[in-house]
Amino acid sequence: MEQRVTLITLGVSDLARSKAFYEALGWKGQEVQETVFFQAGGLGLVLWGREKLAEDCGLTPGKPDGGFGGIALAHNVRSEAEVDELLAAVRAAGGTVTKPAAVNEIGFYSSAFTDPDGHAWEIAHNPGFPLAEDGTITLPDFGQP
Image (cartoon, rainbow, N blue to C red; front, side, top):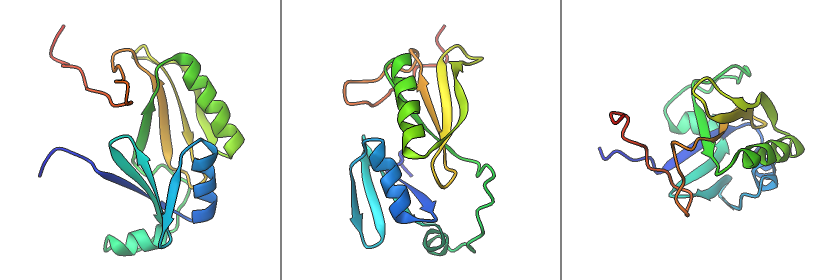
């Protein structure tokens, strides 16, 4: 298996509401057969009904309990001001800020929010993970001083 992720699919309870949330943040989606696809840099973010996604994965659909699902998506930005601007857009779009923006214990500026279905996102300005012009990052060599 090649070391790559191509699509991330979020199971949602209300497709129209979730599509509207991400579009309010400036994302452009395409709805196809009860699924919404967003181009997100070099990968795709997909919204699909939670029960349909569980069934497609061969799992029993459970009821979302609002607890942490064990996964967080991250969106790195180029400045601390961009973190703050994105948080304002999240609030206006109906998301919930779960961690206020601040310099974290590692030393970079970050925050966290959840979308209307409780999917966790981190927003971060980390100068150690510089962004290319197209928004991609290359992880540093952590073995170097």
